[in-house]
Length: 567
View (cartoon, rainbow, N blue to C red):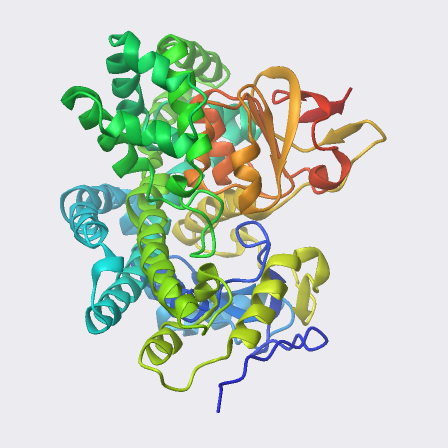
């Protein structure tokens, strides 16, 4: 008897009390059935660890998948889940004073700021966590799952599952390391200068090199190719993209080495989202070949150090003189930790997800050959335990059931489901109600989280869309809608990507494209970060750009104003 897969779109019931919100900034479609049960507990475990370590009163964000869609609900220390609104000031103060965990957190927050404890986290990441994660991913990537016996393939799948859980945990374990110094800087810099957030975030450009992707490896490959005219001819030939990459790998030792270095770093990472259902870069060879072609044809990227120095001086001049030293210190700390935000993705879960996908597809190939699924990529919608059962000929969902869920996952979007569940959201207690250290930590967290998730109000006019000015600059060109993984291969050099959201590993497209527009996300979304790092005009949080902008339309992107015009 086959196991059942149930999807009931008419039933969206939260698992516990609270104001639940649809998380569509990162997950605009249902999660794969393989990832969902791994993601949820690891996410909350990591979030809970970072909250306690930094003395945050945001204990964690509870997350649940309902019919595959992700819903989140913030859980505050000392606030019952059933609470529907902020209590009166005196009751709130008294309840906090009587709660030992609240007092402990506030004390810890003071220690974090006084001792700059995020620096210990950066050291931990650089010296221990990142090297260990890279070592584990390299070992898993070295395995060819198609050559494994059934028993060894099951062991490899289990190792990928364990690595995925660990990767998600570490991603969120370093949340406050990435957020606190940056948020603290934004709060005080805005107070002193009155400048908008996007102007202050321009000062972060150049401090997260990983956000631009495997640029060092790509530039090395481009330099080597320029020295070999015969290789240039291959790169410009009418061969299929897969054949062009293969020819580079079979070329001279120098070119082969540079090609493999680039593909090993960029190729395995998922680039169309955050799920094992998303494509790895190596599955979109058209993009990789175009990136190499553009890198070979272009000159080295212009240096931005002088420009950033000038912008920094302009902002610093707006700071009252008595606060300038504090401004310098806060900016230095924000820049010091800024790279952690994307490093914990690029060297961690984006990579692990791609490795897990490779193992799942190898499993899917065997199941498809045995007639247990209709297509090998349907395997992403088995749980890991179901994959094991299917490989061993035990009870597992049927091909028809899996195909039905695949169709559901690939056709339904956040627009089809409720955006809120449970009781209406209420405003949290103002930071001013907290002791100074608790208030400072709360403001820092709010400054970052609001600029990751909070979209602007819809402001679309007939031919003009408004969003958030994520990265300055203007560009006029062709819009390319990327609404599903297959659209990635259609992106041509010089086009502007228009997407619901982007993942950090979209950076493989950066050498090709000239601008980014998204429906979702704020000034600290990954789309905004990678655009600033690469110097591309970007407008995020447009709400309905993918609906309003026709594919192939000529548009003008103004990342300075946060405006897109359809010409």
